[in-house]
Image (tube, rainbow over all chains, first blue to last red; front, side, top):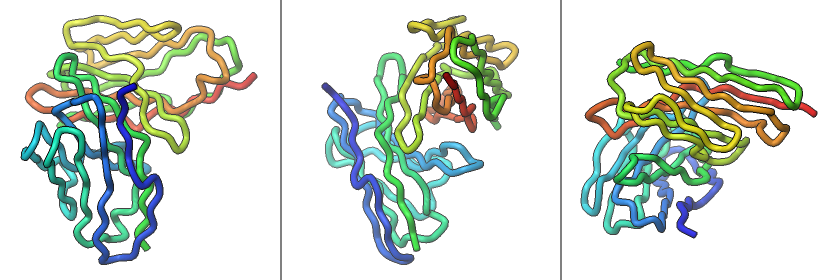
Length: 112
Length: 112
């Protein structure tokens, strides 16, 4: 079955370190997204991509970057991790027809 | 700026009750509205997607309605079961953007 996976599921890192969170989908969706979920803020969009070599900033993109070298993967990089980036991160992809978004299981990141 | 509100924030009911969860949004210029379920520590599962031209969608015991002019959607759960216990999120997709704007959710507990 087609799916969307994220790794690692849990990560603890130190302030200032570079961290990369992986997202892989097997639906062959062109459109992929990264969100973070925080208490009191709900889910907020970090970055998104409409296809290979395409990346766009969302509403909370500072301190994050993405790259899209193939259809299946959209890794999220925290250039220099900060405590404010402690959160749960979700990757999603969507169909081009109905625009329905499908989410991965999430990565819980703790920055100490 | 589009804002999405979900009321109530939490709900606890006995098994068998019919439930209504509410979602309101401030700007009616939306492309679609999507309802999700989130289990503790897990990702989001898409339940129903309503396009802006539609009034309702049904899947099993779930029925979602959309009144775009009044900025409201309701999720109706018939004959609730303990397995329905989860957080329910609604999200709207405004026109001319691929961004989903999420509400902060309704945490539902159904007890036997």
